Image (tube, rainbow over all chains, first blue to last red; front, side):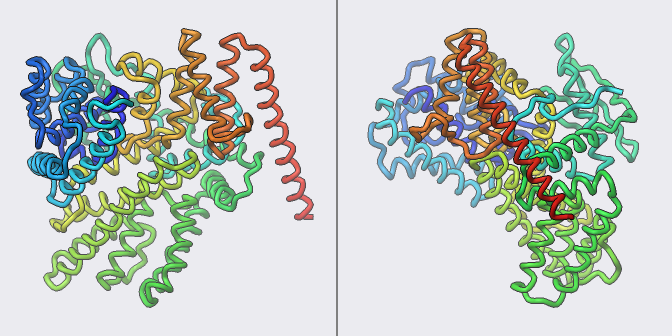
Length: 154
Length: 456
């Protein structure tokens, strides 16, 4: 998946989350900068992929970056320093490149479940977490299909 | 007194009148006029001052009517009730000078609307409400409140189907045409809905002060065991319906084909989010809890983000057309993203809904044409040209079907041609722009003569 396609996917995810990013961002800090919204979208992608992708096959550096982002997004506040030091789009692209050429329905189910679980941990209501994890599943699925899989051409 | 600001810094773009009258009115009619003027002054002052000075974050201290203070910074934009600490500078917001900036801008927009080709009933009614606000505000308020009063007995006795029409008219005049400020209208609609759903009717005249009556209504019904359940259920139903409706309107607004239709959707979203937020806050103040579609922070931010989108574009309309694209170019290079992403992030997202996606793309292409490198200018110009005639063999066709967007694109193309030294194309474009302006003026004059003849 090209950088441009990854960016488009992240924008669609941010759109789909809409105002519900405020579940994830600490409520004492108003007006979420767009970079943080983008970081949250990257967190969602990683969490989704985490349901069925083994990040161990990545290089040490990339794996470390994914681990940092996942840790950072789960604690919300730690996402900001990562945005300064990491190229989150690259982290998302590296992770998406690990998705199998054809992702099966059960794998997608696992991804959706993993993401929903993470969203619930941010305090989202069951129905809201369900709505977003389903919508993000569709976006990732569409994105992988449009690119002919993670390794496909544009 | 500072020189008053003019629409697009006095640059003339055909079709601006419809977008401008609506968005400026939306911005000015969020709150009662005096509050809007003060907030407009404060926003303009903050925007004219750097967000940071020598690495220190600048915070503005604002005195509230109850004597307390709140703190605001504009980089990246935060609001706090407690004094910020750390590496900061705290500046006191000065008293508002005796300026009438909002009124001046509105006057200018109304003048242009009256000189223009507008014939749609909606924009004519909106212009009339704007004039009323400037020239006879008490009469405008009386007229709007009499519409509310007229619907109360119908709401009380009629069936749902029979109320739908008059209720639609009320929304049209008071919400769409902005005869009432939207903070007050949100309270009015809440009171109408709550009374009907709980079948508990206020006997006194409440339309002049819906806010205090809404507080009392919620307080009284929540303190009596026999009405509390009904009230909770009504609040919850209203909150879910309005929230879903507002989310949908916002989504449709961002995907709208023109800024004019985006603005109408944005207004609907803003009212809906506002209603839910007001209901939640007022219910909490009287110790009433109800099942809401989202937690308070999300409701508050949905409302705040949408209000920002409404108000911000009213400000953009008083800047020159290239000011936002220039800012986008800087943002794109600072953040290592392209101009289209920068435009979308700047103002075409759910959390910053200033413009629709189509217009954000136009701004992105225009930002490219403002780059110092000729290749970049040419690439931006091609994007504008591609977009302009997309899906058509006709080189004069536009991918947008609204005058305002066409006029905006033509201005951007003219500047790009000049910058690249493409004199022939620049001349042709300038001729086209002037031609369209002349035709518009001629038709508007004919329209005005027709009106005079009809009066005779």
